[in-house]
Structures are given as structure tokens and as C-alpha cells.
Image 1 (cartoon, rainbow, N blue to C red):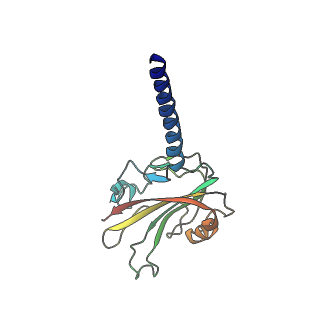
Image 2: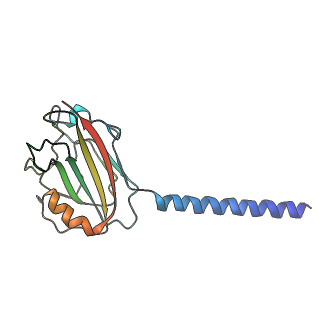
Image 3: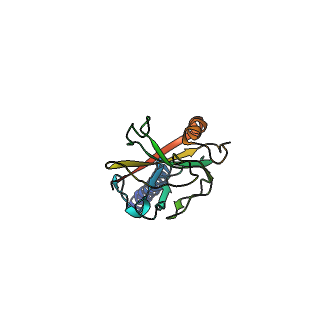
Length: 181
């Protein structure tokens, strides 16, 4: 009887151990790409220090769940709520960066991730903070995990970036902040 109990205990221990390691690995494999910020919650208010009303610096952002086969990352920040009288397409590009190494998981406040920086709608290379002219606007940070690096020169536009990255996207993630003056 004792041998039977020990055998059952050993089988249960083996099954639990196998389940633990298999489920842990499957959790790792299914982890989705994410972009977050300790400065604001998704769909929350962006603090004014990151806008034209403050220091006009980029917030700290965190990347997680980067797929194992990622060769580079790309990041855009855009305002899709611009009045059509200002921009016929209703879109204002605030930040465009690509060829970010996949090992980058944090971009500090006021920093630009290592990579190649494109031109924003203000015709500037780099970050330009939220500055809505009329009401509350949404600001969409989009992170792209890519299976390649891109052959775009510094100063390329967001539209040029999107055309170049389209066949290489493994996964995307978004973080939305809101701001009103």
C-alpha cells in the first residue's frame, strides 16, 4: 500500500511539474507586445509637462512582450483629432522613430530611443508634444515589432515609414493619452 501511495505522489508531482513548466513557457510565448507609460494610464490625461504647455518633452515609455524574432522596433506618436481646416487628413504626427533595437524596453522621460528619427508634421526631427488647438485630443503612441531593419534615411516621414514597414510587421501595440489645454 505504501508503494502505491508513493507512486501516486510521484506521478502527481511529475504532472504538476510538467504543467508548471509547460504553462510557464506557453505564457511566455503568448505574451503580447505592449507599450505603457508610468506618466499616464491608457486613455488617461497626459501631464502638461509633456506638452507645448509644459517642458514639451517625451514621457517615459515602457515596451514589453517583444516577440523573440523581432529585428527592430518602430514608434510613432500621432494626433488623429486635428480639425480638417488645419490638416485635410485630420492627422498630426508628433514623433517618428524606427530601427530601435529590440533589446530596448524603456525610453526615459525626455529621451529619444536609439534608432533613426523621422520628421514630424512640424517639420522637426524629434518629439513635439501635444498641443491641441480646440478641444481634447487623443494622442496615439504605436509600437511596431518588425522582422527586419529598414532602409530609410533620417528625416523620412511617417507615411514613408508606414510604407516601408508594412511587409515586416510582426505585432503592434498602442497607448492612447488625452490632452486638452
